[in-house]
Image (tube, rainbow, N blue to C red; front, side, top):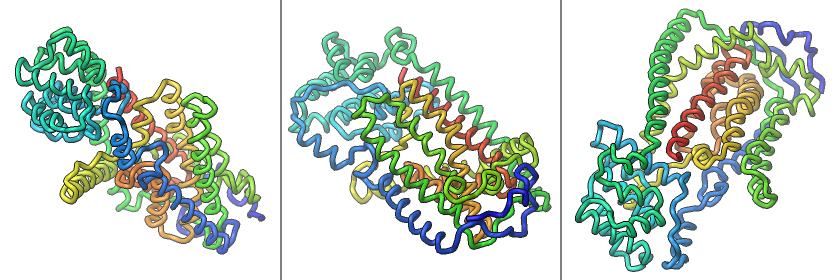
Amino acid sequence: MSTFPPSAQPPESPPVQGGLASRPDPGSRTAAKIAWVLVAVLMGVLVAGNQIPGCQRGKTTVVEKALEEKEAPTHKEIEPPDPADKGTLTAKLTAAWNQISPMKSDADAALDTLPTATDEDRIRTAIIAADISGPKAALQRLEALIDKPDLNPALAEDAATLRTAYEGPGRVTDADDVARLVKHHGWFGKLAATHGLDASDPQRKELFAFLPRLVGAFVLLGLIVVVGAVGGITALIILLIRTSQGQVRPVFTPPSPGGSVYLETLPFFVAGFLLLHLVLERVPAAWGLPPWAPLAAQWALIVLPLYPVLFRGVSWAQFRQDVGLHSGRGFWREVGSGLFAYLALLPVLAVAMGLTLVLIVLKALVEHALTGAESPAPSNPIAEVIAGATPGVMIALFLLATLWAPLVEETMFRGCIFRHLRSRMPMLLAAGVSALLFGLMHSYGLILLGPVITLGFGFALMREWRGSMIASMVVHGLHNGIVLTLAFLVLGALKG
C-alpha cells in the first residue's frame, strides 16, 4: 500500500507544532477492527498465562505444592535451602535489617512476611524469630510444629534441639547438633548456633559478612531516593507552572482517523512474544543451552515493530518520522527534556508505588479474614530471575532492560500504538490505553502493574510533548538500569 512521500516531512526536521491532524496512515478501518480482535485474543492468552495459577511459566501452584508435600514420604532427606532461594534471601534480609535498623517495633510484622509453606520453612522462620523477637517467639512457632503427627523425624529432631536450646542457653551449643542443623538448614543452622552472641564475635561476624555490602546498597538507594524526591518535586512544580502558562506545548501531530498499519503491528508483536516464550520453556532444558540463552533469544523480537516497513510498504524514512525515531529539536535537547520529564514523573510514580503497597496489604487482610490463612507476597518474576542469576544471566538481563526495552518497547507502544490511538482519542486517553497494553505485556501479578502502567503513561506524554522518542527511550533505559543495578547490589550482597 502506498504512502505519501518521505519528502512531505523530512525525518530530521523538527516536527510541526501539534494541533492539526495530518492525513491518515496506510490501512483501513476494517483492518483496524481485525487487528483489535487479534490483540484482544492474544493479550487474553498472555494475561491468562501471567496471572492464572497453574498457567504461569515455570511456577508451581499452591495446590500442586500441597499435593507434592502430601505425597512425599515423611522420611525424605532434608536438603539445605538454596542460597538464592527467595525465602532464604527474604529471611537474611529480615535478620540483617534487624541488625542495622534502630526501629525494632516492626519485628513481628517482618516475621509474617517469611515463608511458611513447608515444615522446613517453619523451622527456619522459628530460628529467625528467635534472633529478631527472642526465644519465646521461636518457642511458640516450634510448639505448633512439634505437635504435627506426620512431621518428618529428622525435622522433629531439629525442632526438639531448638526447643531445648531456646528454653535454656538461648543457642545450640552441642557440636553434633550444630553440624546437623547446618546440614539441614544451611545459613539458618549457623544462625541458631550464634543467637545471643555479640556482633563482634568471630562466628557472628562471619555469618553477617554480607552486611557492609548490603548497607552500601541501602546508602546508595537512600541517596537516589533523596535526589529523586527533591529533584522530582522541583521538576513537577516547574512543569505544572510552565504548562499553566502555556509554555509547554506538544509537538506531536496525530494522523487523521482511518489508518491501521501501526495497530496491525501489535498482534504480530504479541504473537511473536508468546511463541518465543512457549518455545523457550522447552528448548533450553532439552538442548542443554546456557541459562542466559532464553534472555538473549528475546533480541529476535526486535524486527517485529518493523512490520510496516517489511510487509506493508511503508518506507524506512516515513516509518522513522511516524514513530518518532528522529532527532526532534536536537538529540541532546531531547535527552535533557527526557531527564527533566522523568524527574517530574518520579513523585507520581512514588504515589503509584504507595497505592500498590496499600492494595497488597488490603488484599492480605481480606484473604486472612476470609480464609484465616496468610496471603503469600505477590511474586516478581524479574526479582526471581535476579535471585538465582549467574553472571551470564545478569549481563543478558541488563542488556535487555537497558537496550532492548527502550528500543523495542518504545517503538512498539509509544511509536506505533500511541500514534494509532491518537488518531482516534484525546491525548490522555490514548496515553492511558497504550500504557495499559504496555503494562499487561509484563509478567507481573496484576496487583503490581500500577507502577509499570504509570511509567508507560509518563513515557507516552513525553512522546506527545517532544514528538521524538529520544526522551522516552533514554529515560526508559535509565530507569531500568537504576532499578536493576540496585537489585543486583542488594541480592548479590544477600547471596554472598
